[in-house]
Image 1 (cartoon, helix red, strand yellow):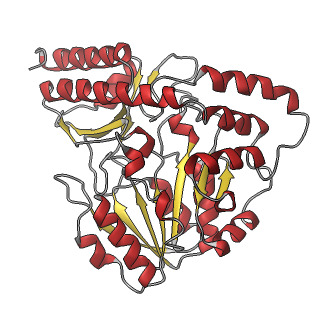
Image 2 (cartoon, one colour):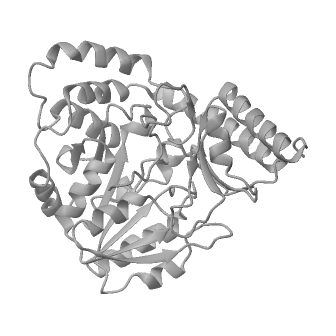
Length: 359
């Protein structure tokens, strides 16, 4: 039987009917913008019709905002949907991934019969280094990188990332850069490779509205590439109506929410530091994240995730990631009220287990 391997499952028998603060999914802590909520409500009256199969208005609006050609954008039912379509379009025989990284990369490529090579990140920093370049060999035909990486939140050095793209191009290797969390990184637009799309035809950028605008239940993601062969194949590798009328309306409205995104960045910067400081007092080891989530390690003899669930919090146990072990957890960065509740709960758990407060 298939075992769900991600966060956000609040529908199981052990969670049904109970109220939790869900720290296991990494979405904007400000919640859905009012403008997006109103657009979704307004779009309901159009749901008796099929949605636009080409997402015409949404694609046009996004192309203008990103300063890319509309022909280079394809939308899907979340970034994961686009990822699976990309992999089916590329049909790689051998894929190079880092470890750890987002689990669905391996799921997607193995589904098309691709063998996987793993580059193990240094466990002290989990930062990608120059050694990765040596792992790009002629037997690889697809490289997938996440920037910032999930679950670590570590950003790839810009010079190294561009060197990787260039090497892949010189060897005829496709490369997918997942920038889904880059919107949560300070000055993230300066780190994006979107301006390089026209230069490198082997490059595909993967993005999502899901996290940025807190609409994981709506599902809206997209990719950008100047590779005409890939774009043509993408339309053949998925259904024509993968993006609902509700999702398209949400996306169009979201593109006008610049002040909301700016405010979220400020909140995340402050609250990430608040949480890291608290975790330091608990003697947890935190990985230096630049994103809207934090990976940390505990040396506790009990299951912190289980204890927190009993207190009404769901966090992401990361023991199922390659190159991570038992004791690694990831939490989203939320607003201060929730973060106070979380740190208070952890303090109480440690006190109850060891008879001590935080240090």
